[in-house]
Image 1 (cartoon, helix red, strand yellow):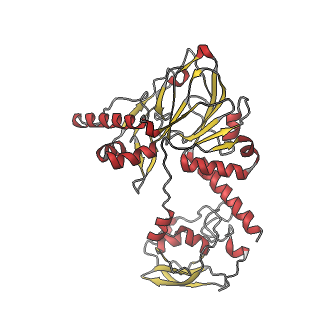
Image 2 (tube, helix red, strand yellow):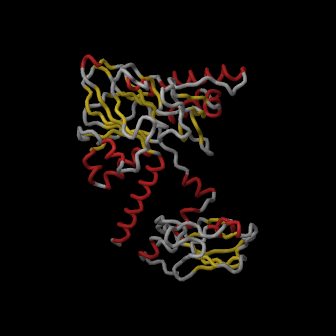
Image 3 (tube, rainbow, N blue to C red):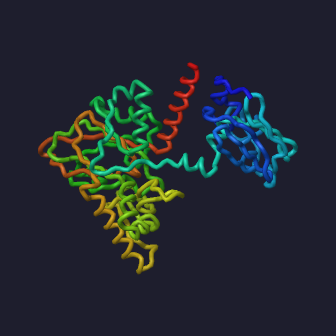
Length: 406
């Protein structure tokens, strides 16, 4: 097998994989073998991967099974026998895995970089199991210059990586012009429109349909818990902030979950399993949704929160004996979030923009006094999957550029 670092070996082409990803070869296949119909791949770093035959057959990248234009599946997967077996496997001269199937002798060719990146053995899942760092009052919010983000994809990548990791970032030197928040958000993806519009103004007004449009103190919360899938990202651009008060506060719901799990496991169990109800009370719409205050993934790690105390709706689905415990657990969580050890606080200056994960970083505002000066922010929302997509596209471009210079 040729192990020279050829570009063709290092980076997958569209015709070699069942997706559009870029899969550098981080380990070479030493040998492949069949065990009870499954495929065992032994790597040159002493690790092994076991692939279920049906799993591997569904991912066949050939032009019969996947479109070479869209990379979407062409075949009806139910035509693949559930008991399909690999009849033969070997490596070609490029180190790719060749498999012949019991399904009408169909043959598949698999890119080693793709196989390595997508194997699901215990060691691989452990390596892939990323846990985001959590933060409290000693957190230094990552700051970035907006000019570089607008003009340079490397700066954009640094910003989005921090936003994905910590759920809270602060941009400076954003031009004091209407619509700039949308311009920056669209560097990531398409703005999500809601009942507040596409770009919304955060300013005190007499006909307010949200507490955000009053001058009162806002407690820590997420926006739109009343939606089946609340917006994933929020952007707030400060254009004016001359009024006394109006400082911004943030707390990490993931950090709260970590503390609850250690200090109050019974409370942790309730807020991660009981559905809490939310309802908006606007004149022209009536959205309602429910879910745990903190949602966990299959590993027991927090993946989102649904916390808001001014849009709560009454419990109607719990028996009487469970309502008291659910309410007490919510109060416990909110008291924890408001402890000094949990919060970061600062006053945004004109030209600042905060970008944060709306389903993780809870935000609040101290009371401000309109008679002392004007306070005006513009905001918008994106979905989380836009962030993930943009990051992957930037990583793909960086990989291609790096390998093209080899």
